Length: 214
Image (tube, rainbow, N blue to C red; front, side):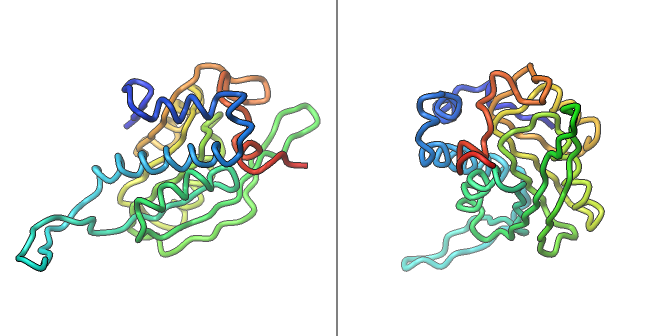
């Protein structure tokens, strides 16, 4: 399943527009805040797809019936760019477990690259709902590599992928390699550069959030 919020007008339009804006990007705190806001919205939308159990709550004046999520998800993110998006989701799923993955592009002399993974820290995964956040889904290679690593450790009841901006190529790559995953994106752009940056995109989300890497 692919959910593209670009097709529905909402306040998310403002957050994406500010993330893309070359002038507003100069405010790192604002950039991180907008990623967090989008994470909150995405978490709310994904919450509609989870399983719930009925419960009764005792109030000062009586009994109220409602339903609560019966199994809190595991919220995973790909370091470092995914941290603000992940933090926004953690505020909504405030009882969720967290997982962290370090994956990066290792560029070769001919400007091609491979994805390498250095670090994986996860809670108990078996049978859980997995939600993986990374703001940019460019080629999709990092996302597929990371989720395949987690799938080698456990079987998940649901898999959700959350990105702010994706490329058409990246979405198609993920759909081919992870056909059961649900993809949630704020916008999809058609073009990738020869270095696999999304156009018009927004640039390097990690650098814009935390400063340029050496």
